Image (cartoon, rainbow, N blue to C red):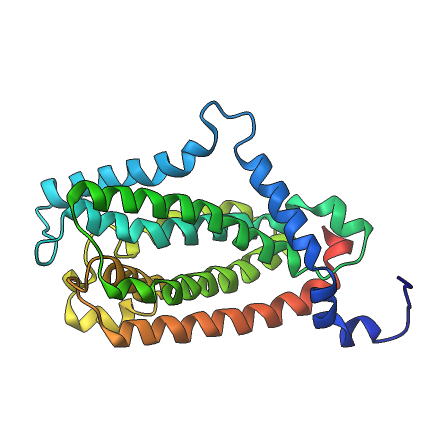
Length: 272
């Protein structure tokens, strides 16, 4: 393939180049998957152990100590696990994508390719852990004898919404991380803080009505409510307004993230 250098050509063909470099998505994703748990004693089992232990702790703290109850006849462990499923994906995708450009500094500084591939590949890679955690959720539902209904068919839509939220926020953070290296210390705090302000260990209906609108600005509120509605036979509160806010905020994050990422992209190779 001939490489033609002319003013503005890279800009005009950027989105076409994303398709031409599609194999790079696969290469980077496979590399990330292969090295994530390399040289660990129990390997990929960490993808199950982390959400499971978090679920156990949250179930004990919120149901036994705080005395919160799950709606209808839903086991509290399933209430928490159905929220851990999208949250774990979001947190992993956000952490991986925010450090993706720094982690590929040698590649970025040496050859041309659309840099958008790097954070996008990190978010896609996080889907592997998501599928493993989904298997854990299925095993728990079998244990409790709690079978889903046809609402389960809507689960891919809420998975796409979680992907959009993670991708948009990840674009902002990975671009900022290149320019301001302080963000590598801020991202873990954002993830940890987000875990406690999202309805993971409790149902969103416990939030007072006067704060519901403000609370819904967290895009993961609508995502978590949607996952619970799909997986728990609609027995948990589902507010269309919170899902609508999640869609709106995720779209804003994606569009603004793309704009900021593209604005700084031409400087990445110089400052990374």
